[in-house]
Length: 186
Image (cartoon, rainbow, N blue to C red; front, side, top):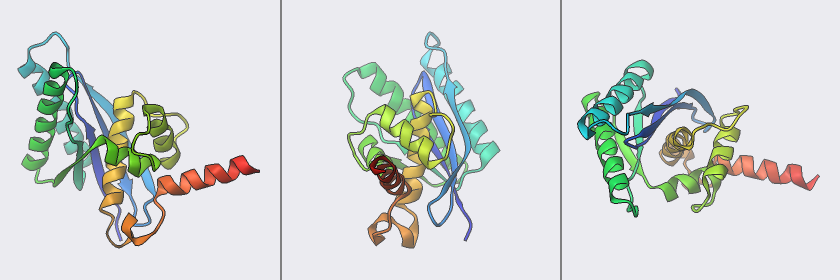
């Protein structure tokens, strides 16, 4: 059975994290691409959205994902931040639809729980687990890029068919955590 290529997008108007992973049926994952699409904070909103769209479009055309996973916008205290995040999210979902690629959204809590086993994990814990799962030598940076990879992994694992988490199999994050605990007991 072929692997699933997932593009994860952590939407933002200034920094939009993008991460592409290939996930095999056994849930092992390989990094394909990671980066951040940036827009100038002092540019008009329409130009900023166009810059984000161009960056996402390039990733879609270059890496041809099977599915796109976007972080679901949640309430934030800063109204301008949540507006920009929602706008960037809309651009990402629109581009996926225009390319004929299915898209799903996941909450930050869902992603954290899938990656670390704890829905309230902090950014560093997510970065550490993403690096461990993808066998990276360094933590993925900035946090937007790590979050995009985490979104992609979360989506692949939550929709992995017969080997999904409901079947009782350990996720790669759970296996990595178990292995790390074993090492500390020695």
